[in-house]
Length: 149
Picture 1: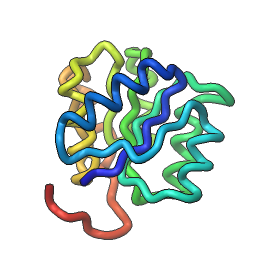
Picture 2: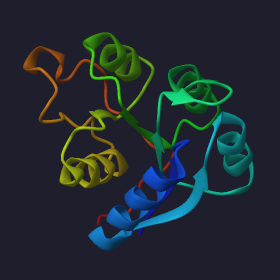
Picture 3: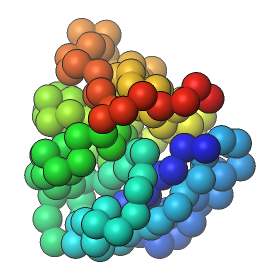
Picture 4: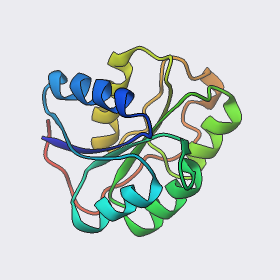
């Protein structure tokens, strides 16, 4: 079971994403956070495999938080899910260690695939990501091996 921390400031969107992920099978949303401070509080007490992270959050920028996540929790994979589809955000997220970057307009099945790919230590080449950006960041490596799904 892939343990996910869902970090999104819009409660209705969090609820919809949670339902989608839990109905996909093999994924459990073990915690939710509405902002950056809450996310780090959860990380301090709960083990998670993947964080789904929005960029525009209360208390700051999710991409700045991504750098801190990767420094303090290198075995946790991060899938960025954002309303911003511009390449500059995608490139920065991948350079900061994100396993995937998805625009919120992306099909919901892509999010499930991205989470599974991130858990399996692969950078997920999203369908809406231009071909020249694919592979822009090395895959995230976990602190220890993970079981096969």
